Image (cartoon, rainbow over all chains, first blue to last red; front, side, top):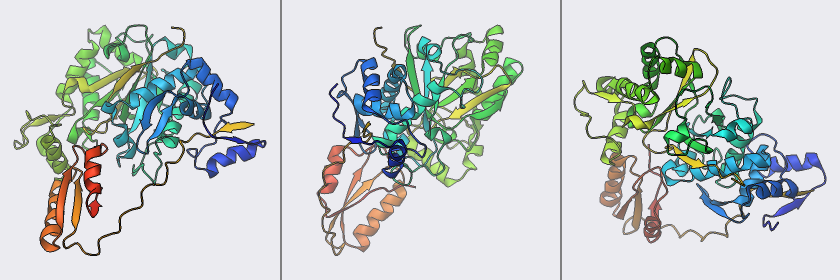
Length: 358
Length: 88
């Protein structure tokens, strides 16, 4: 296989691992060493030209060639069958709608969450149930970390350098879940977003970490709590809209469905009720006000809300479609909301997973 | 064992920066408006021009969170100095 990356010949394992720290090639954790053999196995599995590029990775613009992505995927712990998921996630993140340049450099603490859908999630052992945002599953961890390492090594998204996030996010190491599709009464996320049923896809969305929502009871009771949790004055959405993500657990979804609520019904209800009076929002101060005006002047804030009327109730997003709903986690009392970056970007983008031979 | 390097090769040495103008008076200053703090940028523009005698070329980015378009970068490169990264 014709690979063009510079290579190093090292005989000592410990020395090789330490070299990655010394050169600034890792995120603070040791890596799986990207030997030629391992890298070639990933590229061969994906069946892609090693020199094909998905484009320059912002902010520093290293090319996302299949070869470089495979090197970083090996470092993150990927097996060959994980690699097509990594590629789909990178393709999605590099869509201009996602504004990866901004997501990587903002002072905000958003990170691009990877959501895996389709049969591939179960086949490769992605977790979609108990502990979905946590540790313990190689597929979630390896794919999530592979993407973060690619952003680190090719994009140069490094804290104290181009990554200006002031508090940052534990998902900077890995932030990848699968949607639960078997124990789910509704259409999965990727099908809602235009993919064929039964297909494999990845959706990326830049968001904060999951905020716990104690969510149990009738549909109206659950929605009351969810709506309140979504429109916290501390999140960007409440000031500059954008998109937000709600994660319902399978029991929540089942309860809604049993009582005749579709996912769209839930979304519309949340959009109508996840609102704050303008007086509440205004009490946050002039800087927030300035952001709102800036977004309105730039055409990213809906003009239909009267910002001079204190009784105006501002929604958390511009339109119901900007509320994404995913079913994941254990059957329990807990759901989660994951606010986005606001109107600046990080918007959800979905890409199919191109599996070889399918 | 042969280990492959995960980073993209470093770019060739960039062009050396221009010599900074010794005085603002008479100098052309590119003021890149990131569209993030318009009142502050407007005040800065006025100070540079009215108080210090600089000729200010205000170049407006469509969004403060996306890269500058190429023509904006080229425009700023034509000035004696550029002010970038104006935000909150």
